[in-house]
Structures are given as structure tokens and as C-alpha cells.
Image (cartoon, each protein chain N blue to C red):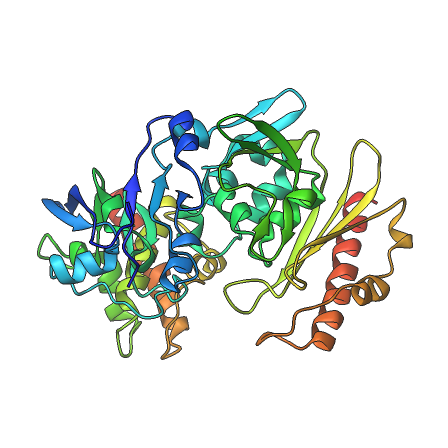
Length: 167
Length: 265
């Protein structure tokens, strides 16, 4: 067929621990779905070219640019957004470390940095400064506050290792 | 906003191949395709979603070849023990493609079929003498990467063909890939390797021109970085003029050769 009207598909997924079921148009991106359908506006949209990292979220633990990822592709998967970091009512160690290290200015890039940092620390709990810089090199902070961001991620990694070892 | 389209989710490779044509295009990570659709450069009627076909993500040794399923992501290839052992240079390049999100979603097959002129993957595969396996409803063929990439965003793949796997001859050439990158894509990438079967010295130079170029020598002393850079036709853009890019390319050729010579001396 020549598609003129939106094709729709059913999506069942777990978003920040909550199961959702929706019918979505195939052309809706995950960023549009999170913000417009679910009201999760913590995920920011900026370049829309998967270059800036503002819309970074995790799908089954892997980082994706929600601006360039179809909402229909989360079917059967688990999505984590910045709202999920404090879902239990207390801040995630990454959020605490960002606050304590003054790792944000305007804050627009922060949700993306937090989610990328979470993905990094899940695969590498003890990264070097170079590894942090390399993993986050696809995230842009237009306030240029990179140094405190890197320090916050290293600090959070140390806090999470201490928690994990029970010290 | 993306244009309107349908999604098909075939359950076998045969079903997928039967669907492909000009208006029904293969869809994996979407890291290139969805961008092109957003910009209105491509308006397919239907995306043929191949993500669920696990057989297209297989990475294994098959005799004297390393076979990488076209649907393997950059991150899967970079972290694969098989690739790291059999073709360490490819694993290294894959670990530095794009950014961490592109590596988690983008596939080697999608990267090659899109033929973005600054693809690190096409350049390193040329250095490694790699080829691609293409299948359609009634044909199957292997095409060397050097014959597959025909120009910017242009390959030898027919609309009804699916790139199912990438093949790298083993023992694979080893060496180094150096790139200079200030934006999301490299300004220049230079692979310098020694081919095990012939001891030939091979250079593959990508990103700087409309498509990667390869050069072979009996000895590195025959490679003149300045002259080689002079043979290329750099594309001027925001990352530099023709003159600047020629200079940069010569510097990176010299550094790559020095690194490989140092490693093998």
C-alpha cells in the first residue's frame, strides 16, 4: 500500500518498572512517546541527530538516542529514563554525585549524561577517567561543564562500589 | 517528524529477502536509515525489521574466514572474543565507531550498505581484504568491499539483495587504524597493515575523500605520505579545506606507518 495514514502497532513494555500497553504510530520516536504519551519529559530532545546525547535512555540496559529509535521497537523490552533513577523515592548515587560535584549548570544535558553514565557503570563499575571521557564523548554540554561531570561520574562509581561491597 | 511508513517483521531470512525492493528496505539499528528518513532523503513505504533474526547476528570462524552476521552491532563486534582474537584491528575500530549509543544500536551491515563516505568500517575492511555476502530470492554472491563501495551512499547492492554477512580472511592482516576526529565523524582515517599471506604492506585511507582508497607496497619505504595524500581528492567541509586535509592525511599516513614499523621491528 502507499502509506498515507499512520500504521499503528501494539506495544507492551516496562518503563521505569511500570508495565505499559499502548497502540503507537510506527513513525513515532521513543522520545516523542516518552514525552507526549507518557508525560516523561525528563528525556530532552535537542539535535535530533543522535549526536548530542540529550535524549539518551536505556533499552534493556543498552543506551539509545530516543530521538532516533522507534517507539514500536520497545515492544517486549525494558526502558529506563531519568525519572526511573529516583523511582524508589531517594536519589540514585549518580544524581547525588552530580549535585555534590556541581556537575550541572543549565541542566538540559543532565538527564542524558546521567543515563549514559548509568550504562557505563553497569558494564564497567571501576572506569578510569579516560574511559569515562571516551564513553561520554557522544554527549554535549553547551555550558561546557565537562570536568565536574567526569568527576561526578568517578565519584558515583566509587560510591556505588562502596555500597556494593557493604562498606 | 518521520514520514508515514509500515513495518514488516519477517521471521526468517528467506521471508525477509522476499520482501525487499525499492520501497521495502532493510531496517536494523536505524542509526543511518531513520536520520535519512527524517531529512526526507529516503521515503520507504515499509521498513523490513530484521532485528529479531538472530541468525543474522552470528559471529564465527568458518575455515579460513571470519564470518560476521550483518545484524551484529558495533558493540557486539568490538567485545566479541572471536573477533578480538581473529581480527583485533577490526574489534579496535568497532570500539571507536560513532558514540556509545550508535555502537549499541548500529550494525555492521547497515553501516556498509549506507556507505557514508566517512565510515571507519569500510576503510578498515578494505585494509583487511574483507568482502560482503549478498543474498536475494534467486542469487547469492560475495563481493570484495573494494568493489562493493561504489561512491558516497552508493554500493553494488541491488534493491532486492540483503547483505547477510561480512567475511574477513584469516589469519587477518594486523596493524593500526589512526583517525582524526573533531565532530561525530572522522576527518581522516588511515589503516596500515601487513598482509600475512603476501607480506604486502597495505594502506587504506578513508573519510577524507568521497570513498576510501587502498595502496599496496612491498616495503613501507616505498610509501611516500606526501605523494599519496596528493593523489587523493579531499572533500572540503567545516572540518577543513582541501589543502588542510591533504596535509592532515600525509601526517596520519606517516604516523600510521611509523606505528606499524615500530610494532613489527
